[in-house]
Image (cartoon, rainbow, N blue to C red; front, side, top):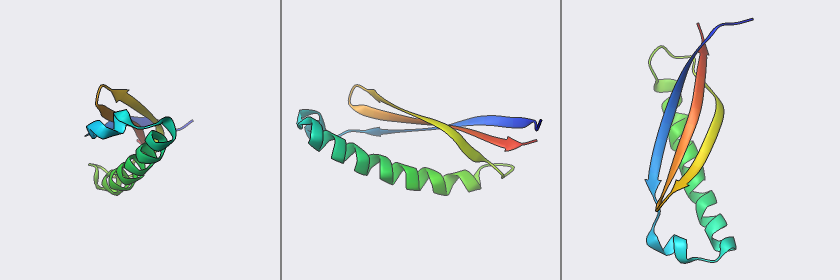
Length: 78
């Protein structure tokens, strides 16, 4: 079995106040767009992390008040 080092990457984004006032289907579309942009930006950042070789193995998206918090669990072989 391989040994791994683990790390976390966290990004938060403030939601525009009007998003919280939208209907459910509109909110879903808006959040999908926001998360897509975050995924691209975070994906570009992972290869630049110290020691290299990191890969995303899990993620979580949490809404906290008027913001989204995206957490990614990273690992790389030792």
